[in-house]
View 1 (spheres, rainbow, N blue to C red):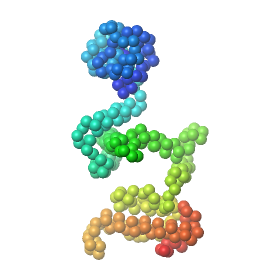
View 2 (tube, rainbow, N blue to C red):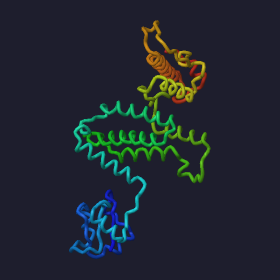
View 3 (cartoon, rainbow, N blue to C red):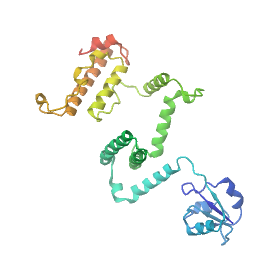
View 4 (cartoon, helix red, strand yellow):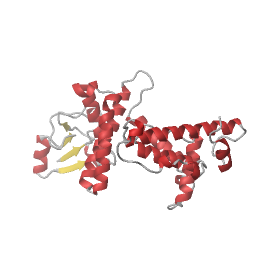
Length: 300
């Protein structure tokens, strides 16, 4: 007497240790897909072997209670991710609210969930962290499922994952160059930046920065990128180094957030102008020297 529990996500993958029990006539619980039943001889009501994908099925539970042998498909890493993808597809196709959502309508939820994740990280509470990571995963699954419905340039969660694998593999040469242990962090970062630069031909060191992020984070990112590109520290204006909290009547009472954003966008504009000017005057595209930055700063 044997019960064979197949993975409901991959019901045609049979555990190797179950094969010897499936050469004859077997019985199936009602939820087993037809394509899986075709793999076996069929059924004549025999109760020797029961194949199921549902451990909570009454027939399965009764056999287990009687002490029959149970052979289960091994749980693989990522099985629950697959289940989440399947569930997201069902929600998108059967749920009224889910079916109406767009990338834009979900953007507020993504921002809110990101801040909640940051709160969980700062609190050090791993239970909360696990839950908030799940909420972020939901956003990734949801946006990927929405993209499947596009008539042009559509993609799915597999496309997202494949793109990530390709990117990480390309930017991490130590994964395939024979390295056997952790490499020097400086060398790893250098290789990462070189590979990243080879992927995208950017006209400015600021290309690719998300301008919608909060002003303080945006300022830090702009200064960091410019510094890596060789911008001398003295060209960074003081109004980006100090944030003034309170009402600034000289600027119509705009908030500290708005004032900093205006200043950093102005600074970013000057960086782009200097890069263009440097190229016009014979500099090579890419990282400029300190002298080239200074000579082209403010030049039009």
